Length: 346
Ligand code: SAH
Ligand code: SF4
Image (tube, rainbow, N blue to C red; front, top):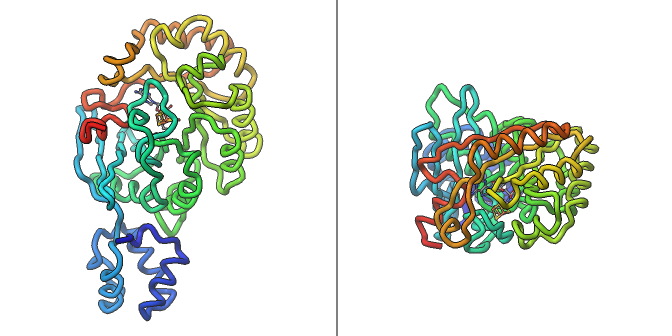
């Protein structure tokens, strides 16, 4: 059964009209769904019961439910969501002072297969629909205490967002829409492992979201080892990111997942400085979150803090802006894809 949350405004208007409803009633349904976070047809209070019943006969309201929730000591809450076809994805709520950031998924699994990532271990099973992407915000919002609201959204969960732009763009519209979830575009960041053509398409879309690029290494051969399916040279990825800045006026963030002895050596810092110096950007260093299955099989290691600090210092000496991401929710397997991995044995 399809969910109303998966319909575009035009499809919802048609579904309501087919059941004898008026266009303003379709808008009321959307309003209940996206603005008020209605979770059942009974919540749609000013929609006539006859119309509600007719819709409920053919549609679910939402496409996902929370199957499990794991709360870490630092307040990070990781949700495993069950989808209508039995698949599962994750999203993570990350409170941090005044901010509350939600990390959402775009695909079930991921086709990119980065060597350090749990999401890519079982390949990709399917794209999420626009409704399934946007609904993660509704589900997370519904769990927050009344004195907290979602302030930021990062598209950094399972999957490669640029390989599902057809569904991601309408989902972001829904999340941004002042009549819907109403989150400002400046508070929304999409992370990609680097697809120049799709980045150009993302740049052409309105409004202007923030872009993060998972670069990991500036040397092509090393990058191909870490991101085996990456077929684009670093120079093209950086050029596409720079074009994004040119078009949108938004500084790009480059993410580097640091793996001891692999991409955290002095020469790796030198190569990054050469590739990124003089570009308006920030480099975000992410010491690898260990994934047991990968640790055992591939022998990758998280660098000790001193190595991370030395790497950051080398980049700063080269003139780059650097931030270091400290681990969150570590006691509950914070790295993306791990909860699903554990629950399914995928
Ligand atoms: N596919 C997109 C977005 C999802 S991954 C991308 O790769 O950018 C979001 C970020 O988490 C990426 O920067 C990715 O490199 C990082 N990541 C994945 N697995 C990780 C792990 N085990 N530890 C730390 N960062 C990880
Ligand atoms: Fe996919 Fe991103 Fe994980 Fe790479 S890091 S496998 S692109 S989710």
